[in-house]
Amino acid sequence: MGLVLIAHNVRSAYNIGSLFRTADGLGVEKIYLTGYCPSPADENAPYMTAAQKMLTKTALGAEKSMAWQKISSIGKLLERLKKEEFEIVALEQSEKSISLENFKPKDRIALIVGNEPKGIDARILQSCDFAVEIPMRGAKKSFNVSVAFAIAAYQICSKIKSGN
Image (cartoon, rainbow, N blue to C red; front, side, top):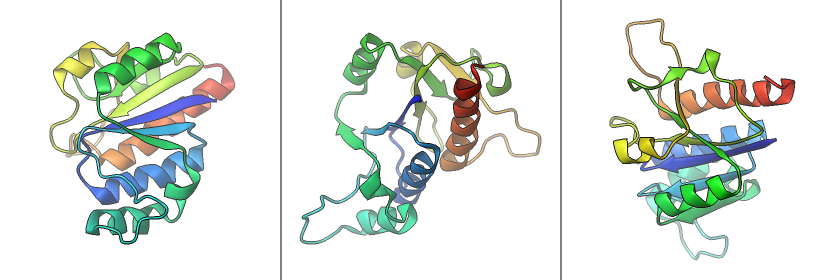
């Protein structure tokens, strides 16, 4: 399967830990942490920050089993992934987004999730091939970022596996 996760400016270490655990469970190839996302501690670090402890607590070891990389420039990362023939997909509610139910993924997807209250910056959205959103049925207009990723990634993985 060809799914990678890009977490951009996700501020909560608990959410990052949850993203690691979910990505591991779904067989995601790699996680890219961009912007000010907290990241796991180096394996030989003499101590962990409070954020790294929160991340580790939520990831339950997935931070050790998942391939991941901290990247300083999301723009350069997106350019590289496009050259590697990844379809760049934002998980974001916008005027141009389509329902996740109607999305037909190609074989290689880079799924971007963004900042919890603010979402994904408009400049990043312009670099995406698609924006998809999860149809909401209740009073709230969005899911927590880690829950939204779980729903979207599971459906995308299922569609890739079945050939859409």
